[in-house]
Image 1 (cartoon, rainbow, N blue to C red):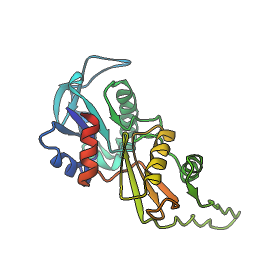
Image 2: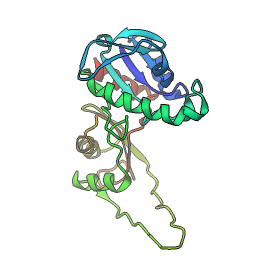
Image 3: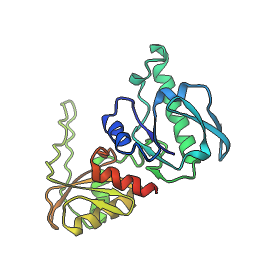
Length: 229
């Protein structure tokens, strides 16, 4: 069973599950975390159970996990009284970090203490890592003026993307960019990453990287399924 952890309002996740209807793909939402049936042993999945799609399953049945939530958002916990939602969301997020890091199955991506999606880097970190990977980058200027409103940095537009899924790179770009995107994913310690470039040519500039991948695209969905098989 491939488990997709996502919001029930995530259209890309639902599209991916429909695309994968015959591959045993099931949606796990934050609402499942409130259903009786979970059994989690720290550091050991033996005799552990989970609730996926409202049903209790043996954790041993899970063959892969695709995570689509950076954290559990309080706004989605309609089944929790409003005054408790922020606290419960934080507890659910902490539980998922522990639970996911106990699983031995393949995962896109394995969570970090601050983000369920993986390395939650800011733009300066991505730019630095991109430069280390040999990409052309634009200097990032940050203006700080005391007593005045600080305007956010304008991110340049991109016209080409590469999505890394394991060892595969998806995108109609020069092979050099695909290699660089794979190196950036390795540096971030992730297996699923979308990298944005200024153009599709080898001398393109790195624009940004995103852990939130559009998994509704057929080519990406197929690559994800093949990653877990």
